[in-house]
Length: 114
Image 1 (spheres, rainbow, N blue to C red):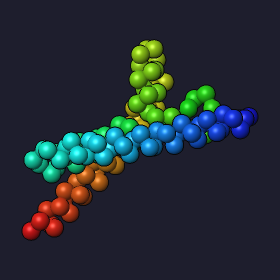
Image 2: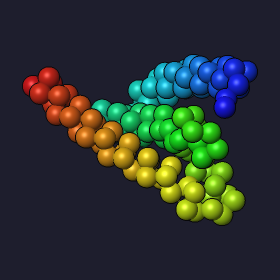
Image 3: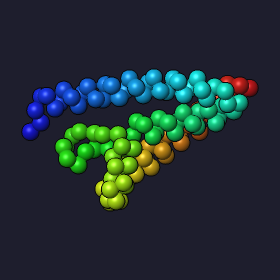
């Protein structure tokens, strides 16, 4: 059973992570504005979203999620490739979904520009 202190710490972690992501996203968006191609700017932002916002369920506590980049990196450093497989699978699915969104955004951009 999960105690309330741990649940509170879990919620605080995700709130702080979300705030840090929003700040980083807007900073990177301002930095990428220097790039001349719209497609490249949005592709880099989409990759940033997939990298930082893809979760994976914790093997220790059911129902708790952790950032997939953190879990996969930790497990790969320890040499447990099979444990990192769930995070890599989540990255693959999230990348495919974001690729579809990116392509649809490029189509929308081209239609609006004409």
